[in-house]
Amino acid sequence: MKTWLWQPVDIASLVFFRIVFGILGFADLLGGFAYYHLWVDAFNPQNFQFRYYGFEWVTVFPEPFMSLFFLIGMGLAIAVTLGWRYRITAPLFACFFTYYFLLEKAHYLNHGYLFCWISWIMALLPAWRSWSVDVWRKPAEFTALIPRWTWAILPFLMGVVYFFSGIAKLNADWLLAAMPLKLWLKSKADLFLIGPLLAQEATAWIMAWTGALFDLSITFLMLNRRTRKFGFAFAIAFHLTNHLVFNIGIFPYLSVALTALFFPPDWPRKFIDYVRRRWAKAERWFQSWQQRLGDIIPAPTAFW
Image (cartoon, rainbow, N blue to C red):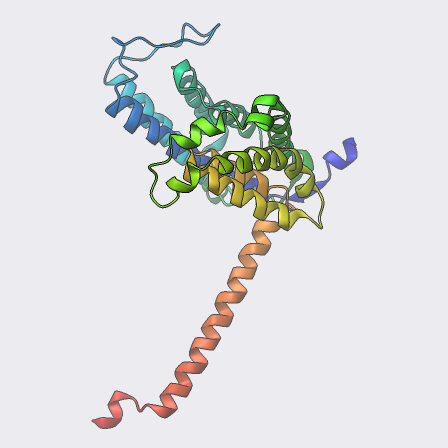
């Protein structure tokens, strides 16, 4: 097992996730800054905040320091995305995001808790060693291969999240009463186009059982090479539905990105090569048709 975990694999998947992770971290902090801080004024020292047990010492800052806190956090997320001084900016971003998560217990979302864990894990991984500003500045930092465990830990973590989410749904309320989905979906009845469908009781039952089936099976579907593409399509459909129906922030995008890591580590490189080949083929096709049309339609200079 130790040998397998230390076998060299392509760094492409880890770099892909570093970029997505940084973008999503920026988006989450930007949303919290714009909505909770500027619009709702939830991080006002004069207001009451619910504290996490053991973290009562985590308090909001007075202005302008609270706004500065968000701006620095977003700057660190951009640095992580670009791989700029990653060994410094990644752990700093983990500190900033964790502090932001602990500021208000009433804002709890499970994806925020997951993102905190991933932030600290990413700070320990060699995700800057390709396609990064650090490598551009110091080419000696570049590597095309990394130990397998530095890639495998991320899909493993997502598999744990999926499986125990399914276990949590194995209860009478969820499977035998479709609760609380019935309540959640009725509150979405005014949504454009899909609202009337969501208000139907049958929709709650379908989503309850489909959700449990998805969470319990998706990890095994993604681990099997023959069912992996079907599982990934299932995951995209599932998380797209969640995005359309529920207000759960970056979680659908984070989940799809983590699920994509179940594919072989070199899949981003192969995907880029595929797009390049298709683009080159499209260019050749366009040029050939341009030549054919040129034989039929004289160039403007022919009339001069």
